[in-house]
Image 1 (tube, rainbow, N blue to C red):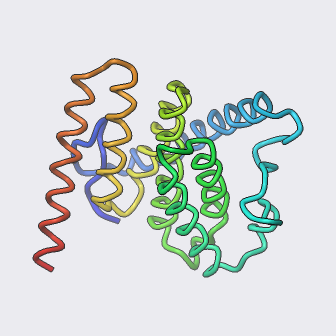
Image 2 (cartoon, rainbow, N blue to C red; image 1 turned 90 degrees about the vertical axis):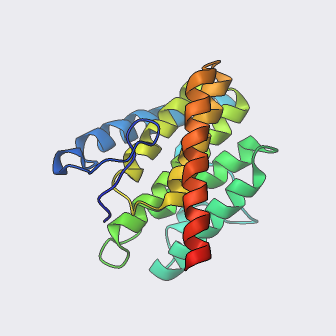
Length: 205
């Protein structure tokens, strides 16, 4: 695990052992799951709870995904995240649903087979995408909660600069939607710096 993490809207600093996602992560997860269940029931009372959302394909439900092998599950998780991002901002509802499916898979990856930092990265991406989708759909409170958890997970992840830049861009969109232009400007600026640093690293490698 790298020694840098995200603080607030992206300031890097060393991560202290006491800051590792544990109690806070579980508390945020419980809160967000409850919110997701309420939102699903409000949208369609026939869909049931969070784990009974409609199919991704002809017959692909959460229960089907749970049966996938470790390697295939990891690849499918990455695929769902890519598909979710490709739908934004045009179809925020479908984008959020695919991100939820990706999260379902990420939470079931075996830490003995997949590094914990990678699992956290997947989960962070899923919550980040849900935050973006909710911002686009006008659910700013839900977006804020999702991005809080995304930031918490990133602090325990691999420190991937690209993921941190995406997180900051999502925060900037949320700030802007709330009319907090100065915070949005700062987040956008930090995201650009990270993106430039990533591009420089790729050119030099």
